[in-house]
Image 1 (cartoon, helix red, strand yellow):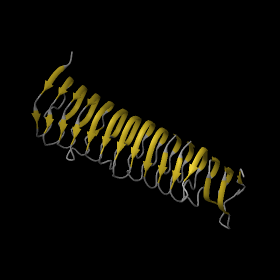
Image 2: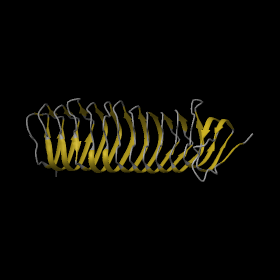
Image 3: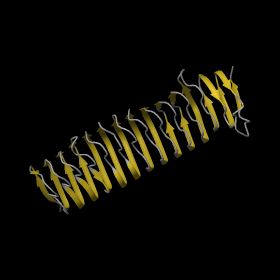
Image 4: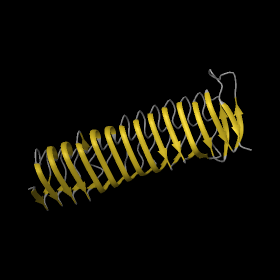
Length: 282
């Protein structure tokens, strides 16, 4: 049976250090540092966090209907087997060095340097606003429902599956490996540079110089915005494109098919084998 702590406020240094098998209801961490640290098996419902580093080194936590203020920066690190739902986060640098993390119906209003080095991340209906470099160095990621306008998302990630996302960004999916994205919109320059085994299915892509320096890039029934130019440069690619594409430049090998291609640029900088087959359906 879990111990219950409710309707209280705590501040200062480590006020709830080391608690185990405990449910927290409607508590407030007012200030200070490390409010809930080195703990195990906790449930947190309807609480508010204002102090720094409130949840570090926690094994087994379920967080529901909570609010994290801007001052709760770097709030959740080194915490494994973690579930969060129906929360609002206004602080930066959340979720680092963790294993087995699940979020559902969560809004993160300062996504700066969030989700770093996570192994086993599942997101459902999550929104990220502002900030830079979320998801850096994370692996084994599954996402269904993501809206993000943060910059430089998904860099150095491995084993990623994404469904139903709308991502407005820049320099996304750089140096990633084993990525599949379904039924999503990705809007931003320099998508997927230097990445391996990237598969995009029924996605709409916008931005300049997309999918360059890539290895084994696959597009199935994707569409491109009219502004997309210089795509697939120095990339091995298998692409089935619906509609038009403005410019293809120096693909290394593979096959590219579209309804219409505005321009194909093959110049002296083409890299071997330089035998990509490019054709239109019309």
